[in-house]
Length: 288
Image (cartoon, rainbow, N blue to C red; front, side, top):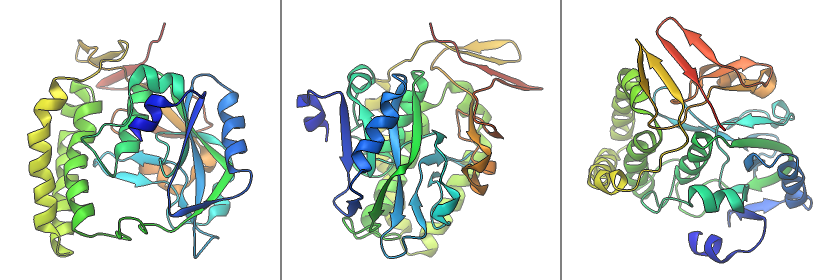
């Protein structure tokens, strides 16, 4: 993908899985949404399950406070996801990206290879002050896992998940957010280790962890720093990366209650960005 992005000359880059099937106006709807605001980086589609098209497969992605990268709407009625909204991440299986922003923030991280690489890219765009949105009228059907053979889990997906679940927050979270989320993230990793062991892929998941630790020095050498934001914790400030507080619309779905994305606090509100004050934490974003 990165080679194609490098030689592309157009305003947008459309990515589409080889196990997905687009409706005729899929691309036109994505472009219409992106044209509405130059601050939009990625537009995510409504992906439907191929054999159960009444159910959503993906309506944008998010990250929980446990460190889990998840598909919004997975397995739920597609009729619940009819309103456009801002999302934490676009799913790269059927998405549109603005080329000028890719040129600015960089392309897909090849250390990820597969799984979470789209969330990493969208997270990076968030840190740079751009937006990712969901377009419900850009529809396609998707045979989940048809390419990798991982409808749920297999050795390949387990290794990728083990590695990239470490790299994702490490690359994108500010230091203080890593500290604040350390305990819930540790709990999340322990739950994943248990889950993969019970499914018979504990060794593959552990291999992914080892690959992640080996990759950390490479990341340290090339972390891109976004424009400064303020994180205040007991009077201490950090500007390692920009942090934004982000809201999702009320109709976005029940799982949005517990998104709690790691550098973002995702609130149930009416779709406007807000700043959040807690007794111990203030997050604010400033972009010139």
